[in-house]
Length: 93
Image (cartoon, rainbow, N blue to C red; front, side, top):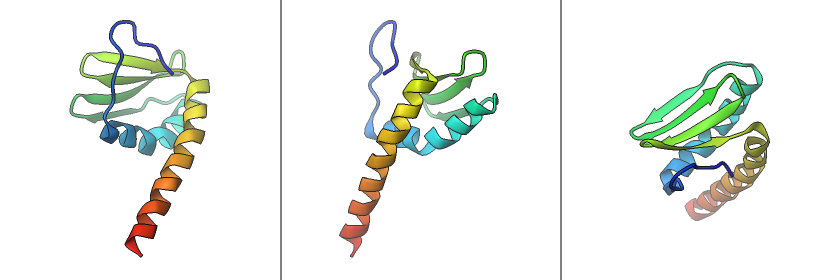
């Protein structure tokens, strides 16, 4: 998913979790032609209104994600997050 023109962007587990948490809001913003930006140190999520693309930055490198890729990721992360929450709840019992 996404394409990096130079070196691939490798996200940590924490960055993937941040992305998963912000993904539903990013989708809403893209559908309503608004701008969205989330910054956490060198990690940054930013929408571009012109082509409905999300750029995921890590330092100076970034990947671009198009709406079809985001929609696919929403389904994947939904399952992953729910599975993670169920595992955490099970461990708490």
